[in-house]
Image (cartoon, rainbow, N blue to C red; front, side):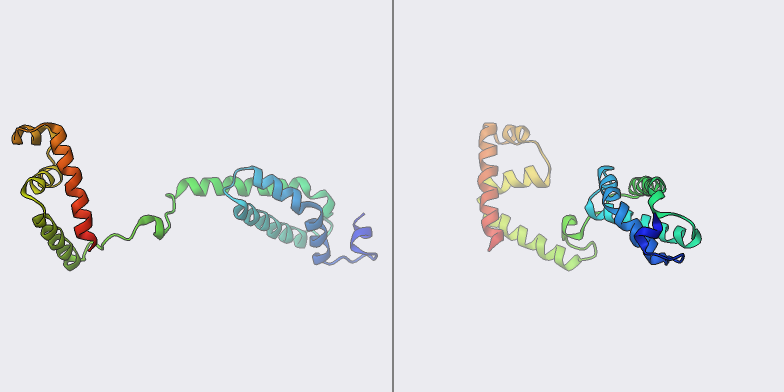
Length: 176
């Protein structure tokens, strides 16, 4: 059968045998690997490519191997590669792209932190004393709204309202 597909004659090059193997099995093998939840289509293609790399090595070492009969072997190799990929993903922490990580200030950016703090202090001073007091108590001293309301002898809704309008004013001041 190999003689009919790869051409006539006793000698078949490794490339001919690999081409036949690819033509006979690649699409089904790719479908099989993609169904194993290996991650994405690119990962599935990588695993199939690695499977065919190993098949190329196998065919080079075994000149009498018939590509038509290698389907079970290919699936075994692919299944083991999928298992290895799953193990590798579990063994290392999840990768985070730099865009997802955010571009916060560097830890040693002392001057930038000081400038930011000064800008925030200036904006807080521009608020009315009532709004400034609520913001300082809520966000700097980390006091609960009901405690601030008790200290000011006002309803908790007033503290929440002052907080809302103070944040709105700060956004406008800091955006400038």
